[in-house]
Length: 259
Image 1: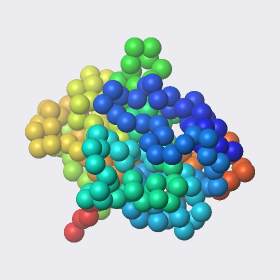
Image 2 (image 1 turned 135 degrees about the vertical axis):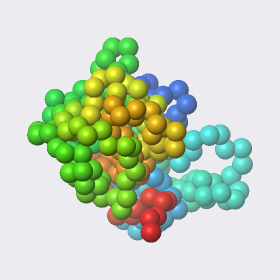
Image 3 (image 1 turned 180 degrees about the vertical axis):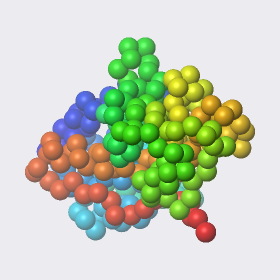
């Protein structure tokens, strides 16, 4: 089984041509003709991720975030990105990234958020031209919840030590919008589609004013909002491939800590 066999399958789930223009997705390091010994699935690729792949005899890392995002003019080991690239090449480990290709998939990042929240009847929040792909999802809770209960439920579901949220509206929460990663750009869309709450990450100070008592904005953290993505990829890969190990990385790559 080669890297191309795996990438061809991944591109059925998350076609590279549906990634955002600014992104860098696909096979970033390695040759597609390489035979695969094992696959390590992770959210981010760090030096410790390469070490984990070596230890577990995986010569392909499937990462949500691309380790090479902007152009590299030198590879001297002076930054963590350069060191990861060097270590991967030195140890013959390939790296494939899905990022916004999977963000825009109707069975991707935001769909997984809906699943863990138990939402039903969910659809794309910001559909692109043909409405079959796009960012975010919006769906319904099985039963309406008081805001305080929903905040507690959200904090527990996303396994975070702290969430940030806007002023409470006093309304029950029934319709919920979600978007993995930085999602402030979709606040107006969530309000327009009558969501009672919007769960995403990386909201800035002034973003919370945009709620205007129309919606409960909840920032669960960037890593936390996307953490289930690697589980999603493992689920898809293990259903399709059985001739090699597909391993969920044990390492948390969250760079943010809470006191």
